[in-house]
Amino acid sequence: MTQTEATPQPGPWAGAATPVALEARGLVKAFREFRATNDVSLRVDEGEIHAIIGPNGAGKTTLFNLLSGFLAPTSGEVLLFGERIHGLPPHAIVRRGLSRSFQISSVFSSLTVRENVLVALQSATALPRQFWVPLSRLDKLRPRADEILAAVGLGGAPDRLAADLSHGEKRQLEIGISLSQDPRVLLLDEPTSGMGSEGIARVIALVRQVARGRTVVLVEHNMSVVAELADRITVLQYGQVLASGKYDEVRRDPRVIEAYLGEEAHA
Ligand SMILES: Nc1ncnc2c1ncn2[C@@H]1O[C@H](COP(=O)(O)OP(=O)(O)OP(=O)(O)O)[C@@H](O)[C@H]1O
Picture (tube, rainbow, N blue to C red):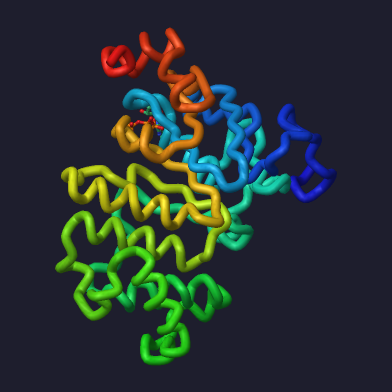
């Protein structure tokens, strides 16, 4: 059966008061004998900020790749607002409203800050064969690009070369690039990685701002960032969900304390 056939069965969370934005059901991703995710189920409600945490190698990146179409699951399902999206290519998933920023930079260094957003806006609206158009023809998208740059705190730097941005500014630009798709669901892969406390505070404020009116899922190692931002968290370990719920509930879960949070949870 193809994924377009038959309406997905209601999940165990059907009837919940808040609509479910993103749902994973029994996701398995096997690399030969090894299961990087092993029966992962996850529910992200519309409008929530949901953090995925777990030790190195727990399967967080693999899960993000499955949710965003960069990997096809060995088995299991991914639903975006109730529609199956697993098996679709990433660009088709973007068009359905889920966009992702990467841990590794997706910024074009040789373009200016504004040009980076213009290219992203163009690719969000054009047919694939129209992707490579002269930058001069993107002028009509400029007001929207400048709005996005203002939203991510780069309104004062549209003409700077992306190569000259600081690490933190590049992360801001990446979030801006993801916003150019105007996603209903935004996946952020370690948005604070490699940042000092000032950069982290800026990203926390930025994530809060971009989360208004949309759903955000982030992979994050920094537990104080998770505590500040996340409505709910899912803890992965060895490719499986160890716990899921509100931050305060999960941090008190003895299995989580033992597996991951350690002494921090006793603080
Ligand atoms: N393409 C692949 N082929 C084989 N094994 C893989 C592949 N991708 C990931 N793995 C393995 O799957 C497991 C989960 O990896 P993954 O990168 O998803 O973990 P993670 O939680 O994101 O880790 P980190 O916090 O270090 O980024 C790891 O043991 C990894 O080595």
